Every structure is written in structure tokens, then in C-alpha cells.
Image 1 (cartoon, rainbow, N blue to C red):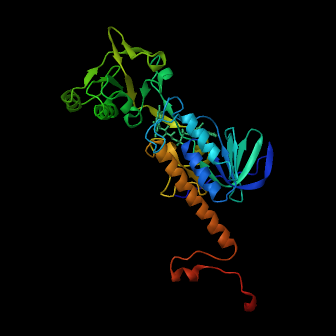
Image 2 (image 1 turned 120 degrees about the vertical axis):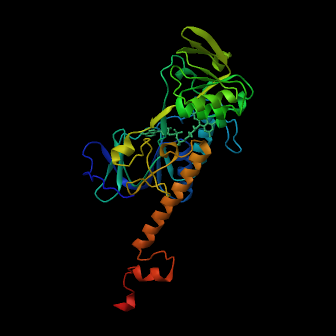
Image 3 (image 1 turned 45 degrees about the horizontal axis):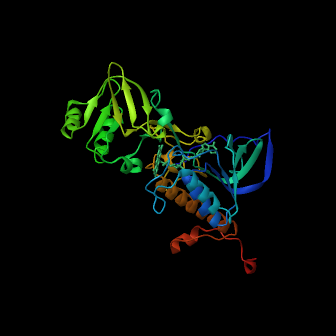
Length: 343
Ligand SMILES: Cc1cc2nc3c(=O)[nH]c(=O)nc-3n(C[C@H](O)[C@H](O)[C@H](O)COP(=O)(O)OP(=O)(O)OC[C@H]3O[C@@H](n4cnc5c(N)ncnc54)[C@H](O)[C@@H]3O)c2cc1C
């Protein structure tokens, strides 16, 4: 997946830290924290840049993470940060502002006025949910309005539920949410953009379809009330929760600025080693288009950490004139320094 990257001269403004770190991790959500743990335990010198709360910060409880079902995301993060204490992982409560590739193949990351130099760069910067501009919806994101029934379906099972959206993705989400309740309404907020067959399927399983324009959302768990969806010129709908599949953008522009290739859907493309199209730059978690769950993000973080550590081990072994061999044939390809009695 190699792609050429513009090699920039060393930065002129700001303070350059002399030490070369093993890995800078940009982002301290579940994926970045998990990578930091494994790299720390691998005796690597790591800088973890904590630019803010994780994507699910607005919920009262996260679900589906084994042994931590129902834990508040802030508590999970606090525990994950505490787990890093024994290791050589420096946590910086600030975001990366700029990244550059140095002529020697290393990278420089600017945090405030400081440039940190690193051999490997790992992006764990997540995605940003682009919510529809319905008044009252953003305030209820994670509090009565959710994106995933696997995360928040059980708490609302058998209740009156709504799915907001139109077209193929709303059809899919409505049929999925139907597995948690037989009282589901699809709110299209205008043109449903459904085929006659899709409409028939939804009706067949008892999903009602409303096409009137939505005015706003009111109530919800923060006010200890059901969520009230109001429409223009039509009676309101009272539901326990609303589900929707929002558009998403990259959480940071830095991977694209560095030249990392994006997919048609705007995800950072990685290979099966979590490496981006820029050699030495890795990416993990939601930003890569992987299934969007905490446990999945954490697993990707650990995988990337193991791959990065293996690369660094290989480089160290190689610099000593040795190499790993998979087969006897590999021997021929290794260039060794001369043995003392060869001279
Ligand atoms: C409402 C809602 C509820 C959810 N509920 C659940 C659930 O119950 N169970 C579940 O498994 N999943 C749930 N999810 C999904 C889960 O939140 C994500 O899959 C998970 O957080 C992804 O982890 P991540 O590390 O990839 O990204 P994120 O959690 O998004 O973390 C990325 C981090 O990078 C930081 N960052 C961005 N740019 C920079 C920068 N330049 N410098 C430094 N830091 C930067 C961000 O501030 C953020 O802290 C939910 C999501 C939403 C939206």
C-alpha cells in the first residue's frame, strides 16, 4: 500500500524535543488507550495524546464490553489511563496540531509549541457523527437518541421506538431495531426514498412509516420523560428512544494531510496490519471503517501495537546484523557484518 509522501524539512518554529520516541499515539479513545497499554508493556517509549473524550461520551452507560457492561465511558477511560501508570507511557492532555515526515523517515508531531519526534505514528482519532439538523436532536444524542441497537437496544426492549432516516440504511436499521420491539415507527422527515418492495417489507413486520416533516425533538431521559417528536401539521409521536445512522467524518484532518489514502466513504484505509498507505503510519478504530464498538476498537489497538512492536524488534535485530528467518532459504538474503576471523 505504499504511496509517496512529501518529505518536509525539519520544522523551523517551535521547540523540537531531542529524544526520538518509539511511538506517538494520536487519540486516547478505546483504540488508542489499548495500543498504549500493549506498547507500554512491550517496553516502548510512548507519547499518548489525549485530545478529548471518546465518541460515546454523551451516554450514561456503555454496553457490550465483557466484564464492563453498563460502565460509564468516563470511568472506563479513567481505569484505562490508570492501567498505564507502571509503563513508559506519557499521557499529554492535548491534541496533535500538525504532523510532518522527516527526511530520515521519522515523524514530527506538534503539540502546542513542542515538536515530538517519533519512529512510528499511530492515529486513533475516531470519527465525528454528523447529525441531521433537527432542532433538539443533537442535545439528545446518547440520551434518548442512539445509533446502535446492540449498544442501547436492550434498555428499550418492547417499548415504543422510532428510527429516523430514509432510503436503504433506514430500511435496514428499522428492520434491525424491530428485533428489540414490535412497536417501531420509521420517521422519514420527507421523502422516504424507499422502493415499493422495501415499503411492503416494513409494513409486513408492522413498522409504521411517517413522512411528515419533523419540527423538533423534546423531552427524553434527561427530563425524565419519553422523547416527543413533533411534526409540521401532524400529531406528535411519543417514543422511548430514537435510533439513526448518521453520516460520519474523520475525527482529525491529520491523516489525510499526511497523505494517508481514504476510501470512498472517507475512512482511512489500512491493510491487514493496520498500516495506512504511508509507511510507518498506522490507524485503528472507528476511523478505519471497522465495526464501531469499544471492544473492536480496543482489539485493533492491541493488534496495531503488536505489529508496531514487531517492526521495531526487527529493525533493532537488523541493525545488529541479524535477521529473523522463516525458512533456510531466507539465510542467503541476510547481509551480516564480517565475523572477526573472516578478516
Ligand atoms: C451515542 C453512542 C453510543 C455508543 N455506545 C456504545 C456502546 O454502548 N458500546 C460500544 O461498544 N460502542 C458504543 N459506541 C461506539 C464507540 O463509542 C466507538 O466504537 C469507540 O469509541 C471507538 O473508539 P476509537 O478509539 O476508535 O475512537 P473514539 O472513541 O472516537 O476516540 C478518538 C479520540 O481521538 C481524539 N482525537 C481526535 N483528534 C485528535 C488529535 N488531533 N489529537 C489528539 N486526540 C485527537 C478524540 O478527542 C477522541 O478522544 C457508541 C457510539 C455512540 C456515538
